[in-house]
Image 1: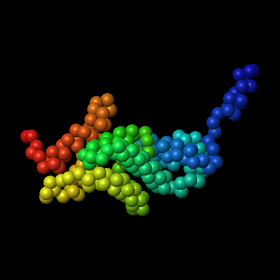
Image 2: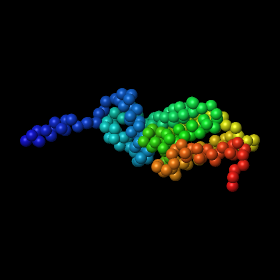
Image 3: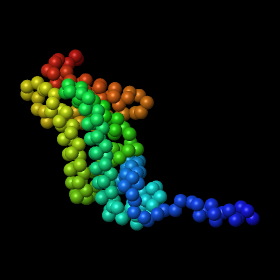
Image 4: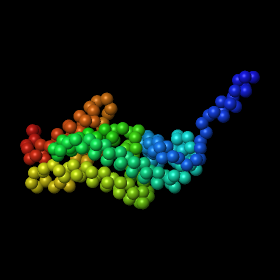
Length: 212
């Protein structure tokens, strides 16, 4: 009898989804949870209902803050860009020598992107499946903000005559972003990976001969 009497009480204590507007701190947590789901399931396979359920709110509350999944993903992506910019700027602040700044910045870049449960992981999304030109344009605008920060680091290092800085920047970004495909946790640290990749570019940038 006691067990039966306790059941409704236990049910009443269970957390029920809410449709109330979210305070700012909860909204930040929502973006992190959304990033986790987008990162693990992909954009196409993650629905607004999935995100609402995982966060313990009703879909109506989610739509109160974000009118569509595209709008939510753009917010998650922008938060990821903010995270990356803050990490790079913090890491480079103590340094003045251009190559040390570049190294510190790209260590922070990899450490942030390898943390796949954060909003920074949304930056890794494959845009090829996005049908909305408006969404792609919004993401490009955010990506350009971050690439401007990285460009200031690559612009500061000296290059030998005849080497176009644009291709130097593309090569470095390509190498670091490709590392996200083959990197396996538990082996080399993000700092080691960053230093090894930059070591490939530094002799060339300084006009030295590479050992064959």
